[in-house]
Image: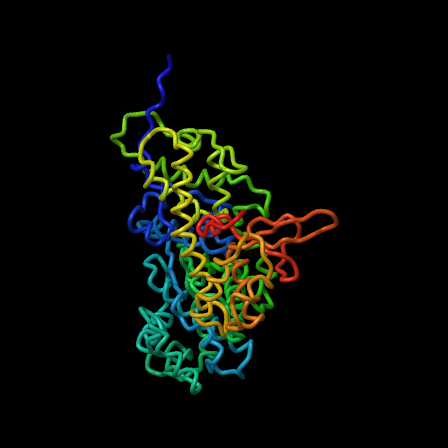
Length: 489
């Protein structure tokens, strides 16, 4: 009789953290040895081919940056600079007086100025770079002006918006260290282009723009600013490629944001865009998500463990048949309670470890309990976070009223008209529509569409018939909301 494999205990495995930065500090090996490079995102960024990383919150954009930061940490000719925009007033960039009339071109120039400063600083601090005296003097002047080094530009934006700010820098005439001139930001862009063009280095430099997942575009100013940021990224990368300098700017951005911002160059980024679509536009099997968590799990197995080698964790722990509604196997059951995102599956498996820490097969009751806890805690928080401060002119109290109206539904199927009586004139129909659209964008509801005799339900991550948002039909709550609120199927 063949003995059963002795796999590690689930409680001993590490599936990672829902936040890539936390995972990088607590379990860095999972982001190096256990990293799953979906769509070759990290490789394309490292090679200079990837300029924009597109995907919903939780799809692994920041994880790609953290992977490269850890992998390159001890490599002298690899440099990754992070710029987190989570707390940066991006809309204020539209007000900066850089030396041209206010408008989209001025905002684009302002972003170009801010990005070039960081690129130049990274190049100058590269010990393998060949830098002339004029470039070194310009860098010192920028440090004295508080523009490079460790600048907190948030405090400067207000002053720059009130008047045309000028910066004193060394004169370009003969590289004289004594003479200096005052330049506007727009004029200084030209000096930065020339200085960067004069630097020669065998090193690879990346400026990674991250943190945009923390807010949702609400105002015209934010739309304009982010569109200008994308355009400036394309302009600078084209310039750097043109001078054969191994340096690129990479911006991580949600797909819904990328689609909505006003940009003249976003289409040109197509050849350099990396889209993290784990659902494969509704055609994905989920195998890649299981490969991701499986790789992390195998990496976390202790060296002292002497049992059976861990292969496919679905076979090792999730092979029991189940009878939960229409679900007959646990892997499919688990995936249908996610939004086909790494963050969701990691959160669900971490809940599973709490109810089943052993090394034997997970039971149906264990699977149910894990889904229940995950739905009531993690998923509800994700939905609440996805609605908070994301819709203009909607307060947190109104968000709470809207959520209460969803909880009061008698079924997972509903229309906008079903919500209005519960709201009791505390939100307008346009506000409810905006909140419903936001729910759709974060994957919490699906939209039902009728085509001929067929009815299709489209979630943002799984679209079977176009998949646009409309309030003319009916909606379907995500499985997790049905579970957490004990609603009828």
